[in-house]
Length: 116
Length: 117
Image (cartoon, rainbow over all chains, first blue to last red; front, side, top):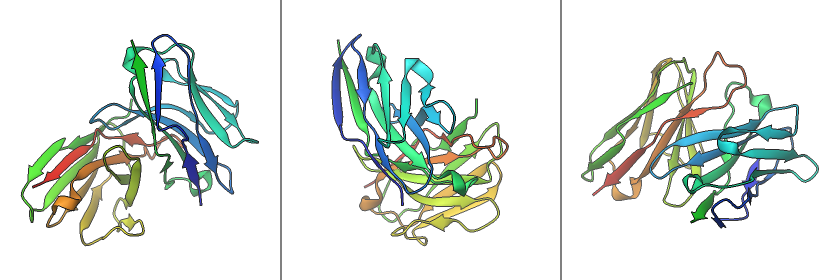
């Protein structure tokens, strides 16, 4: 079984400061990893994904994440945040061997609040 | 980009009413769609996997007679909450995979806020 841990439920950050949102996963098989953002009363928008290849993944809105297999982590980073980045961020994992019907397992989410 | 449309966005109804939520893939075909439930300030919990032309696969603990899923075409899946009660109030989100897009991730709808009075 797979699981995802997001250790920080809330992260307040001053505007233009850097941020890192932590994500650790547990899986006995190889994984696909994702970060999604959710704005209030909306669905999820994909920020970035790791499927294979380079461990440093760049996404939309200036976000990036690094896959670290030895530490089973996939932390999300942004060098300078904006007010508009205030949202809920979810890390998710799926099993690539279940191709075509893969389920996403989500972490509990991190609420990022940008302080003006 | 791939768009998933979910309708309605908000429903308020009386206890005992059945409510249908639609999930449509607007510009791609989806053999598989997923239905999630999200309680306030919590993560998404997968309820069921909807497969076009066959029965849905429900996660453990989800009542299939309570949450009826129909996936009659490659672009439409529906979730019907039968005889809804206040404890069914929640945010329901669907997602879909583009069957022609290899290992690309799921695309999510904007969710349906269901409130049962």
